[in-house]
Image (tube, rainbow, N blue to C red; front, side):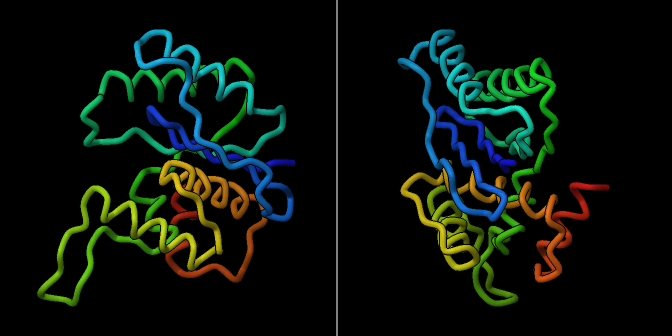
Length: 176
């Protein structure tokens, strides 16, 4: 049994964990070239090649603020279409829930003087939080996000009691 996280993007993060939560595969997938539809088709094919029957899958939900909305929408729908064709069930995890699972709110500082994290700052905060929570490191923020998604899939199956309040809240929202 595997637990898979997919973070759809032009550089798609893919992580598969085993039954014990150990990383089997952590990879950034890109497809071929930079021109669509070839890039999109080959990226979807590459993702599909990494999936196995019986995988427990979490996919990051649609981004709200993407500058490349057409590609993102096509990729997100393409992944879901492939999962449907293969009869693979999945959970969709909102981008904010993914961050909440590792206690990243998008803000830093004390009450009254908080600063909003954006772009690279927010990605770095998530990467640091994943390392602190799970001792997982990777150079790609897409793979780190996929790791969180795979970890959510793992916890949905294992129902551990040792989770934090914010992690239990994320799991409860996914299963409601």
